[in-house]
Length: 267
Image (tube, rainbow, N blue to C red):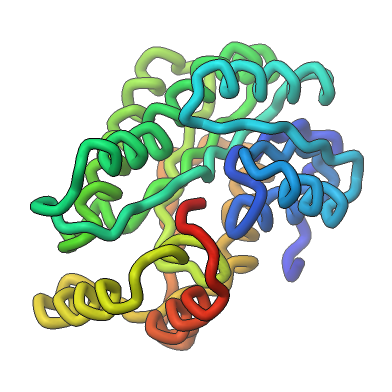
């Protein structure tokens, strides 16, 4: 951790914390003194993340596509931590498919994970944040700014997430709700299960149409550190964008590493 962050005794729930960005956010928050509940559906990875974090971190099983899981995860975190000062909703996934190919199951999975799950976690967590004068962070995406072939399902779900945040703010003006726009980030599982040939074909199309001008990815720890810094801010943070720059890892290199690692997609 390259900057000094003080989250001593802050009680934080990170949803989507078994790998990638969510896992790193949880680890950095714990090292900054927070008591962190790591929530995700893959229990074995979740337990590993908690052991790495230390600092009294706990694991909470949660499949965000299941409403009872979302309610139970928040309740377990509140019971274990003695309340809640913040949550970070990181869970997200994206099929790689053109609209003409996308089926109903792909649509439902993207929307349930990226949008509906966020709404369900927020519904359960916000009453606790209101009591603690806490903060909720939602991880959005630079993709809301560009209409990129092959990522339409992801973009629609994230545009919906942005609208959800605005509506939650209007209903809960006493709670700080922050939208964090994140650019290309290496070290995550986004795109891990994409077919290599389809990936290359769609990336070529992005470049041909100049819809992907920033062809780099930032390190996951750098992105996570910036996100955790928002938790440490005393004032209200409306929106913030964390983007990669030209000196970071190229997108091709990042995707090659993911595809070589194997595994399934999603976060």
